[in-house]
Length: 307
View 1 (cartoon, rainbow, N blue to C red):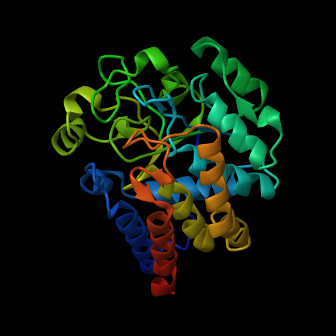
View 2 (cartoon, rainbow, N blue to C red):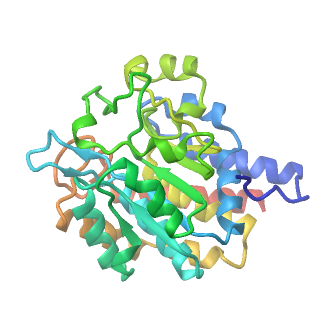
């Protein structure tokens, strides 16, 4: 399905702005995303334009289960960004459904409740076969995966350290297939997430540790490559200032200091753990929230530089 076309303001300034945003988004990567980002050029703008203009319900997918943690649970990277995007879209009067699987559902359920969103906004299907009918029943036309494991070429799902996650992961790749009928958006930071199959295999195998094993084979129509998947919501908030200026204040509020702190605290209260350390600490991918907020501010600063 087509996403919103780029408007006629295809100026040098616009191209420079999104090039700068994507470059900033990839800086600070520890897993090779900075080397992958050039192969996904334009993905941020395409995704942002689509979200700004589509009026049909959007399904947001997330949830990386850390089975080897002392108390296994979903990781903090992914769910917080999804909630920020969901809150922004809902505040703008849009329909959203958040999709995860049973192992990650407790964390997402708590986050949805803490955000004040209706409980029916969370979908946790029992089987892969139940997913597509459930999405169609809600009128979903856009699927957006953020830090969600995807199938590698052997059909299994892997962690960044090549741990086999298949036993704990419901593979949602089917609705991200090229002929699924959905507009497919995705964001990831390590090569093993849904959407990364849009990149050349040679790049994934070369720049990602154990890429030949863990690289996801499932692609997307618009892929956002980021140093940490959590930054996806920041990048979209920055992009909206250019694409949908009237909506920009809502997006900025969704990633405010107060909201970000509240989401991280809520996730920890629900049992979430850091995906890098497997510890229940107030960090995301091994980094304190202050580091993430500084990245947000640098992305917003790129807007001022381009003004």
